[in-house]
Image 1 (tube, rainbow, N blue to C red):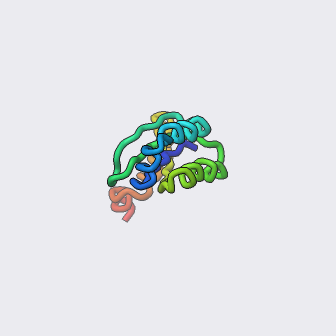
Image 2 (cartoon, one colour):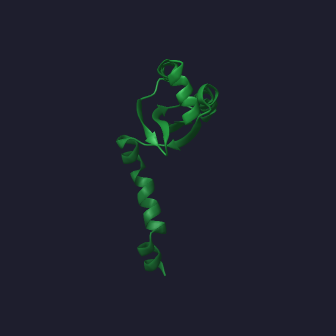
Image 3 (cartoon, rainbow, N blue to C red):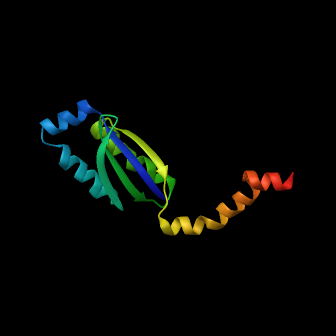
Length: 111
């Protein structure tokens, strides 16, 4: 299952890691363990935020993904199921079935 893991590092903890020189090395160590497909960094709501795309085999892996960020930075972690283009193409039949059954025009035609 592909996930987008959004990691927001609070300013105080992030500033402390910058000041002691450990921010980049700690993030690098966590990412080396997690082996993401892609990683992007930006600011969101005033916090240093990472957008980390991962492919996991089982939801039991989620704690091992989130805990390093909690422990190292007191970070907020949000997980979102995600799809690449191939996944979206494979989802087509399910989307079409839902549209036939639940779209407003489908409901109106059946009424």
